[in-house]
Image (cartoon, rainbow, N blue to C red; front, side):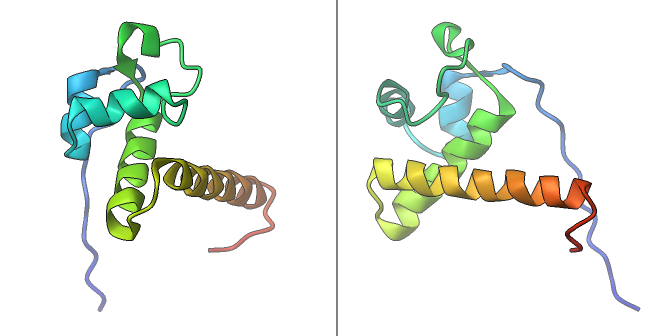
Amino acid sequence: MAQQRIVSGELIDEANLTLEDLARACSVETDWVVERIESGLLADNSPYVASWRFTSHDLTRARRMCRLERDFEAAPELAALATDLIEENQRLKGRLRAAGLLDE
């Protein structure tokens, strides 16, 4: 019989993370986050950015961008583009699943 690993976690409420929380969760300096926000690569047009609050989506995006930059020595713009493509792929797969056209 196959053994299943159970993973538990806590759902992060929207607009719950501070700049410091986001940086810590990504294992980066706050300057890294600020540079990507000012470049428009992270927290794009979020109403929470003005008050320096970030969503769980921002956290996922920042972590993905950080990994791409680190693991592939990608420029921030390239990491953001790759992240955009990954997110779009996930959205499209979700739509296909909802329509019953994708089995995984």
